[in-house]
Image: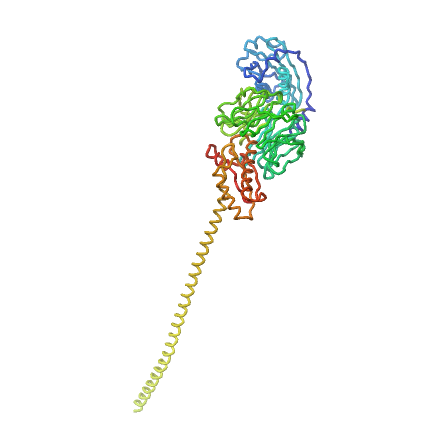
Length: 446
Length: 193
């Protein structure tokens, strides 16, 4: 992790970015992307191979990877329909990437509404990348950017360009600067060991964050992604550990009883967690260094799994106060509580959308756990996973457009992602052991 | 003539010698026979003593065996009580921390054992099956262990002898899938500290 940050810092310092052209507003696209509706139409996009000024074969291979990575990165969002290269009628890699070189009719005729071209200049150390997004129907350039930096920074450059595209089309920064934390079992240990890992939004470069050689669960990242809270059995019982990821320092909430399910409050160095020192597990508000501010829930049964509204004024949580696990919302100013799930007898692990009032959770029906979406207004829940093993621990991407969750659909538990409307469900990363408890981080600030 | 006289003398000497020899041999014979009697007596005595010793040893062996058998029986009795105390878990229904009549019967045995062994302290572990959410299961395991502890406190066991810890779904007894495994895993388990 430390390495990643150091790398990012050095990279940010050395990477020169020149804004070549600021595109004029093409507002019609903004209205097209409605990622929370199942009927959302995907925009057909063509990403032909990039043009390269180099004779070396390894450079040519890298360039091919770059256009492919651009496709994969944008495809991940679920906003686009990536067109097959077999249908392409011209090759900008050969004829040039400027507007004057492109015959837009060749692209509209195959159904492309957007076109990305790229030009690459490389020497032994550095890489310069010029990337352009065109509206093929209007024959206009929408975005043009030039990036330069060490060769190893190519992934970051492409993500930045993709961020520009998504921001241009949706008015929101997208997810490319976010990460996902999750729990994985460590195979071939004498006892059962679970540790916390972090990977990029697309499952790239998973890294182990903890090494307690014990059972660690429930990772939660603070709003600035500097602090990680989790539950560990390091001292023989479940306690909450709060760790500064970069500085490897922090505090422990190890008071008597079961100390579990930490969740950070947005934009504050505070978190909520369930402690059982007074009673059964109740939710408390804590300072970022683990001191109790106040008790939030007051019921005679389990209260656990808090998740905050984007403004931090309301909190969704699980309570067994009615006799079965159901989801409730608390107004933190008035401490008024109301129930929001009524279907079924087992509704758990709520996650409040970082951008609205949608709440996703894992509910049990017919002995199977699935992901559902509801909201605070009492809209009937929409089922997002169907007939695919047990589906648990959903977490929204920072823009609310995607959901990461764990599923046992292929036997052992793995991490999956889907669009917030339930489409495009796929496994996020393949690694040994079983993965669970994913949480999507907020956007990382540079 | 002289020759004959000479021969007679030799004969007399021979007779005397033989008589002497006879006497000597007889005397020797007498001594030998006394020795044999003594040896036989000693052997008989030794045999008697050996027999006594054997009997004593046999008796000792019998007693030892009896004692060992008794001790083993006692140990087994204690062992099986301890074995049962550790290995018979209190089971729960799915998503429940209620103590069924069966669970209460098992807890009755725990009370007896804890009363008979007033020097031991225990950890009560609360466990869940793998179904459902990690965090909720941790809370449910906590509640199961706490329910058991409260029950035992009500039956007169000092709360200071009992500590609870929840493992949620993290330490299944049977890691396989299916209701058979889940049933075993929804448990309160006793560990002697």
